Image (cartoon, rainbow, N blue to C red; front, side, top):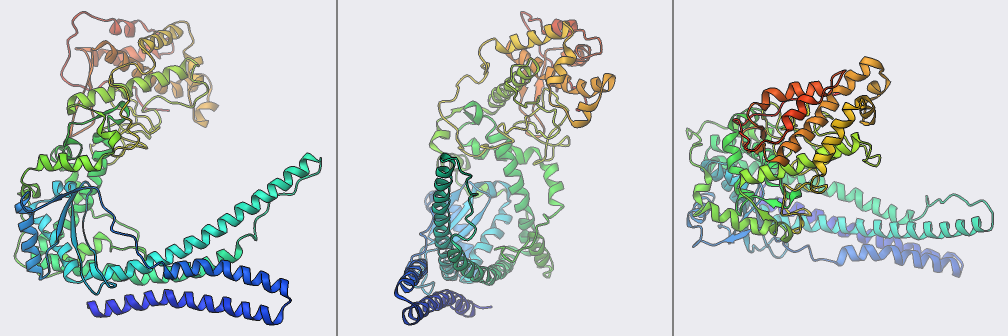
Length: 623
């Protein structure tokens, strides 16, 4: 469908919104006339009031013609003097497509590329064109892949998609705005009626009478009925316009294949979901690892560190490239499924142009490091920008030390009965946690959970610690006044050592299995008795004790977390302890516990030696 038929369809759909409003206003006016002619004065007055109240949202939706202004996406605008190669590439591709190049280029911090246009007169006249390119997308794409993406975006310009989007967007905004007005009024009416009934019920109770149950079932029904009418039209409108959006994506893909080549376009389409998944993993597990400890990577590395992950995990990423994502199809999707888009492109005749995956697209930037640092300034919140910056090795050690200490303290408080009844389990014992900051599978696949065996070097909470939980996003609630001493004991100096000592003393006093009863247990474990109960509890006790031991090693300065871009972080233990610690832990949680070997290992030494990086021993399977 060409631009003219699409514009006509968009105008008809937009006109349908106004026709629906005029029809409803006419119906309300007819009701007013009938009430004035055939009903008594008081009843007619009520009809007039209801009609006026219902007509107000309709009129507001019809005559609030302004659509939302262009949303300024965080990023850095670059002119041709700053990024000459990037601008020249964009201009060349726009010329090949046969369209006007964008007026602005904005570098952003997301895995995306998009175009927009400030069109006028319902899209009949063009306006300022903007191209947004995400630096993470450029990080993962080759130059030929980026050219395919840019050709796709220029194809939207060439097909007038950005100009015609103004008409469709206006209709969507008006329908949604009108529905919101009706729902808002219905909600206010329900709240008012609920408050009235609750006040009446309270008065009845005060007089010793039985209060009636609050019932607002019929309240606001007229508003909701009107909202349902507009919702039904809105669904029809969205299905019609978004089907056009999906066809526009196919057309832009064809333009990309024509300009950049079939193979390059197909490769870029396959690569984008992989980059997106890897970037989410990177943000959760590396970039925001230290946020909870008041730490961030060096300037420019919050975004630029993504390069290290892609370089180190290429084998895992290759496995992801082999499988296209399966997405549920909805008539309200603005884009077709990636698998369908790839299939259509690969069905095109071979054009003889092979994709060149060698040169990275970041080579189009004059100074990639400077660009990463500049965009980072716009992406992060002021609070996040105020956090302390550390190099990656120091960041991983400091952040993981804090998380290890906090996890150990939680287990210690629970085991010693000082947790206030909080249902807290040791890190890594629930089988659902991931390695904080490095939560990969045992095979290192990005985006999946980590070891579930409670290994001190891998154990993560399931409670939302940075890297695997809430607020692990750029700048989210990252208060600048958080501790600047990440290695500090979060419960106070010496509290961790005292907790471990108290726990070992309790084990020596024969309280090990009473301690086990305080830990969270499955229904099967709770029903077990005797040796079976001990076997259920032993892995959990071992995992929690491992966390306390790891925290003590870190507190003494005898262990260190080691950064790895290719796999989970490893806790480097003192020389020889990697071999001795498992047996010491087993002895401490045996049927006849012996904490002597563990106490001997934890005895501070004057000049500790360290072994090569090795993961701390696993406490074994969990209950």
